[in-house]
Length: 77
Image (cartoon, rainbow, N blue to C red):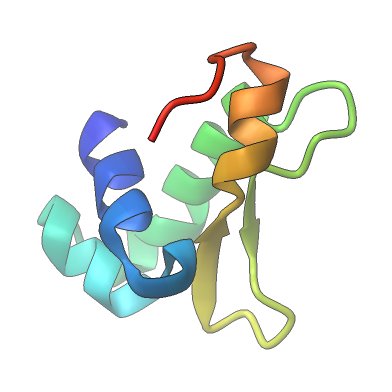
């Protein structure tokens, strides 16, 4: 999960294509929807949509600021 979050955090706009993320994680692309769903269940608590697919479903987006707020991480860079 840390590799996934690091890849999203490092990506421009904190979003990355499903294909790129699959390559980064070294998993088949057909597994990505399940992986993203699992991680989203851990992060998207109390109505916070921290990890989502973009409207066109082509990219996965991390809302870093919401994650900082939700998990009370303070003002991290």
